[in-house]
Amino acid sequence: MSSSQPSVSIVVPVRNEADNIAPLIAEITAALDGRWAYEIIYVNDGSTDATGERLAAIMAQRDNLRQLRHSRSGGQSAAVRSGVRAARGAIVATLDGDGQNNPAFLPDLIAAVEKGVNVGLVAGQRVGRKDTGFKKFQSRVANKIRNAILQDGTRDTGCGLKAFRREVFLTMPYFDGLHRFLPALVRREGFDIAYVDVIDRPRHSGVSNYGFFDRLWIGIMDLAGVWWLIRRKKPTPEVTEVKA
Image (cartoon, rainbow, N blue to C red; front, side, top):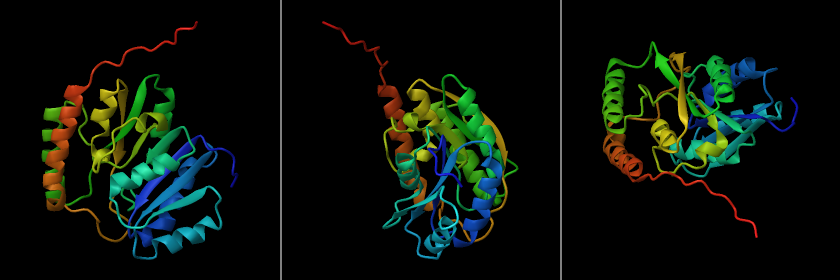
């Protein structure tokens, strides 16, 4: 693989996903090879299994694969933020590391960012979800409540498949749970959102690292905070430098 400057960075947050590493990387490369100069950044969020070792073994064969490691788990938003800050590409795409997000949709997301004049975010919208009935129900309720309050026009903010301009993401206020409020915050900055329907699938192996009740009340507080940020946003004035 060439080590030239990438135009696209793929950020994959993972925690204890050792058995999903090799299959997902193979799918990412199959989707992107020959289309863009790209890098893959895995953010190892304090894994205690063989995730780090599996990544290291593949890194010895691929010079466009990078691993960032958190000394302890910081959560999905922290992992995404670490990856974006380290990214070398102007466009960043994200997907979950459990295999439920199909990398075959990455080209559509990246191309939509490239073509959109004022597009700050392209969000995947899951169809045919493979989660349990309870998890699908809780997602529907959460999305309806969020959309009613924030009016972000997005039916599914929980999909890990997203693409955006790195510089836009770095203007976002950081907090735990940021990844679920990106559409509202990107709109707050005056950018448009584009959407791509993506087909959901079961995870390759393992179990989910994220529960419902452990984030319910935090999510409510985050929702209130993002609503406040939107309400307090003032138009950004145009700035020109006056020469002597």
